[in-house]
Image (cartoon, rainbow, N blue to C red):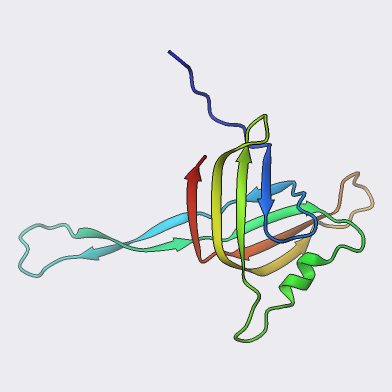
Amino acid sequence: MTTVYPHPVHHFQVEAGFTRVAFSRVQLPTLERDVIRYRDGSDPAETMRKLPGLLTVGDCVLERGVVPSDTEFFAWLNTARVGTVERRDLVVKLLDASHQPVLVWHLRNTFPVALEWSVLDAQLSAVQIERLRISVESMDVQSA
């Protein structure tokens, strides 16, 4: 009998149309389905029925080290104007040791909603990180 182990999370790739695709961390969106509570007035039961409602897709967060002259996240965030924004589809791939995808997340119709940088601190020995939060309209997950 073959033992199957969970896959490590440290080897992944992001495809989003960025020039530099080296990310140190990706927080994938959460999926949450609303619950519709319903009770008919003539129902003798004292509990409500629960029905599945709309699916809500959370935000995705991309993190990477800041490189001088690379302001691509900032430029994408600034494409948003009232009523218009540059939307992109993102693909996040969890890779095996031979760099082949194991799991693939397709994030559709995304656009940036927040950009932040790590704190500047003269007492730290750390890399400056930029963090881009992206709104995701829909998501598919496929096993490779």
